[in-house]
Length: 304
Ligand SMILES: CC(=O)N[C@H](C=O)[C@@H](O)[C@H](O)[C@H](O)CO
Ligand SMILES: CC(=O)C(=O)O
Image (cartoon, rainbow, N blue to C red):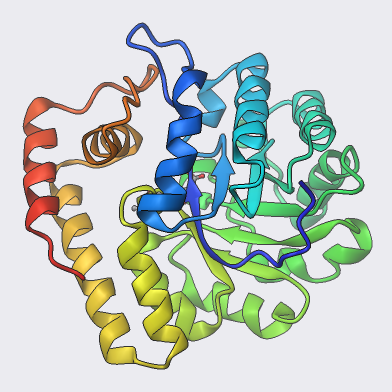
């Protein structure tokens, strides 16, 4: 599905649907694609990332999911980006090769996070090996220091990276360090897609020049965020700010209750009525109380 279109706009970080007994559930992916496109206006996805519990899945499961998303998204989605990052280099390489073989639009990788790279050069060396398994497929670095603990600044990482990794196309930047993000934009805007990944701060990143956004909340707040992007494109900052504050009101509410991937899964089940199932250990199901409160808050939210 090598798409000529540049990566931009909203990209939903997909949830991995599971059956009640915790197996991956491929049977609802078709419905999920339609829901994103028709109900949320979101036409690009990021598969097997944080929200998709990618690092809690087996390699076999990750391949099956990648294949299902690419197949079901064909002719419906603009971009299907497969996250192939892993602790083990051979595993990440195998996933990259597989993603290329099934026709993914792009691949992405995090830094290995148990034995960690301690400097830019070792991180680039790792990513280069992964990317080179998919020589025709755009590669994105997935920066999420809160989870990986790898805090190498992206500004530094991007300097000269294209010479090392010819398929390098951009970054999914899931961090609140807007100075680092701004420097990335300043130095690389023409060359790379800079995708912001802290949904509650997207407008600030847009002001700095973000190309688009990857996040969990675009699964169920896609419409509102699309309206924010439209307002921003028309330079209507007053309206754009209202949308950001409105979706932020919801996020602030759920953060106080305790929010993470398990809660995202439950919210999406209740909003889309597609059964996303339970999360996998070490995550536990969101509580009934959380689900009720979050749902009530969403129902009362009037962003549009
Ligand atoms: C840590 C995490 O999961 N970050 C997600 C993407 O990177 C975001 O989409 C957040 O879920 C979202 O911004 C809410 O905090
Ligand atoms: C949020 C995000 O981008 C991820 O789930 O990987």
